[in-house]
Image (cartoon, rainbow, N blue to C red):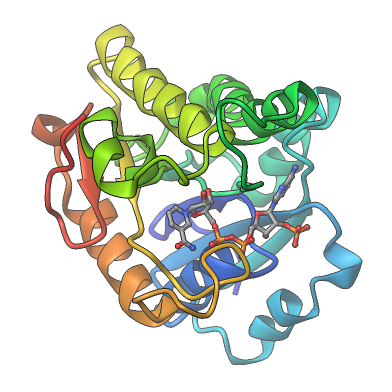
Amino acid sequence: MSSSTSQNTWLITGASRGIGLELVRQLLESPANLVVAACRTPEKATALSGLKSSAKGSLHVIKLEVTDFDSMRAVPKALEPILGGSGLDYLVNNAGILKPDTPLTLDPEVLLETLRTNTVGPALLTQVCVPFLDKGKTKKIINITSTLGSIASADAFGPGAVASYSMSKTALNMLTYKLKLERPDLVAITLCPGWVKTDLGGEGALLEPKESIAGIIKVATSTTAADSGKFLRYNGEVVPW
Ligand SMILES: NC(=O)c1ccc[n+]([C@@H]2O[C@H](COP(=O)([O-])OP(=O)(O)OC[C@H]3O[C@@H](n4cnc5c(N)ncnc54)[C@H](OP(=O)(O)O)[C@@H]3O)[C@@H](O)[C@H]2O)c1
């Protein structure tokens, strides 16, 4: 299927596996969606490319390493021929890393790598995508965060919970809120997928990707301008900051 302005257009990072892959899979169940799936090594992303054969929607895979700022600035060159003059309706900043640590054991280099991936990457990708979002029908930015980034919830996770990762997501949440203040005409939300069985979430997680992602799509598509700047869960609940 070729791109068309009538389709809803999505750009999703970290689409090689986990939440990103399942999000692409569910979106491609509908011919109404055109998905640009970004991953850092497309040649190895066989599960992603394998979705093409059964897709009802349109799938375009692009190479994107979110810590490589030059590659991020080149995204418009990759997007233009795919979107063909259409705008971008949904930007989903999903790619992320988690390396367990605590405030007193963290390695500064790991903290910087985590911030670069989970916070700076989404900030820069949002900047380069705004001209496409401006032309989009819905103009939505969905930053995939974690309840571990909620200061109000930190006591519940206890002292053993991850420090660098939590800080990166708290900063991502603030980025989202600042974006809403700077551009009230965009819809920017920060969205926790719940605890999901992926490589990052682990086998002990509570949710199957299918359930979490069905919720993410519902929240992403149903939010309106009134929701911009909110910190939400996959089931629509508001997460305390
Ligand atoms: N799973 C959970 O329980 C849970 C809970 C709360 C929030 N989240 C958030 O959900 C998002 C997805 O997590 P997940 O559970 O799906 O994790 P995952 O299974 O570990 O997948 C992570 C994805 O991010 C990509 N990625 C990592 N670093 C990247 C980089 N520098 N450039 C480009 N892509 C990169 C990975 O690509 P490669 O395959 O190339 O490594 C992979 O596609 C993350 O933002 C995470 O913080 C997850």
